[in-house]
Length: 227
Ligand SMILES: Nc1ncnc2c1ncn2[C@@H]1O[C@H](COP(=O)(O)OP(=O)(O)OP(=O)(O)O)[C@@H](O)[C@H]1O
Ligand SMILES: [Mg+2]
Image 1 (tube, rainbow, N blue to C red):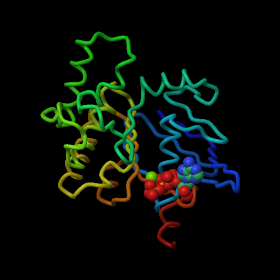
Image 2 (image 1 turned 60 degrees about the vertical axis):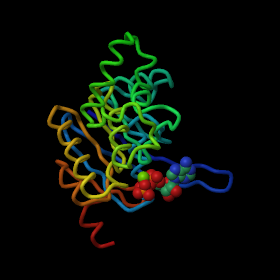
Image 3 (image 1 turned 90 degrees about the vertical axis):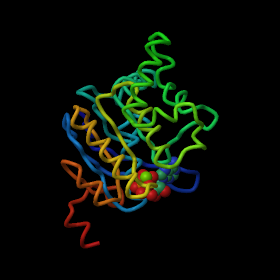
């Protein structure tokens, strides 16, 4: 479903170049639930955002559902992202001036669907994420766990094949974290391919497979425990 081929990511600045990822290869199968773990700064968000076509690699390719995205123009890759990928950001990325309903509606605004169908889809996503009752509130009026649910509703409103989640339980107490993890598991049971970045052992136990990043390299678990 996702094929990351020989990816490098170099952040360039006036004073230096920083290699955030080096020679990363990763295949994610359809219906898989993969966890990416690793210390802070190891490149997890960088890798996930490249898999989500939010950022471009300096070197290497990303194939989504068999299609090479490396030659795509901005518009084209945006379309792939819109149709196939739901992305849950590390810091929620909700728009503070918009209500919960409007935040979740955003990804649908430029689609070719009627306002009625749009409202129906937003309500369905809000219900699925367990946050329908707060649809008229602003993000600032919600708890962290509730904001995370809104971010999840927004990520699933397009009914994507792939759900990418960057530390979806990072800022939550353990009860809310458990609820969010159950939700992700349900989506996986219903056929979505999930890649989740996490620091949490409990979260990673839900996954079918765990990969570890260290200093921008994918490494084996044994390597990690000696560090
Ligand atoms: N836009 C950027 N410009 C320069 N360096 C960056 C940029 N974004 C990330 N980095 C650097 O790349 C490295 C990897 O960052 P990344 O955000 O992928 O780490 P992470 O594993 O997600 O960490 P965390 O667990 O803290 O979220 C870090 O050293 C970071 O400082
Ligand atoms: Mg991160």
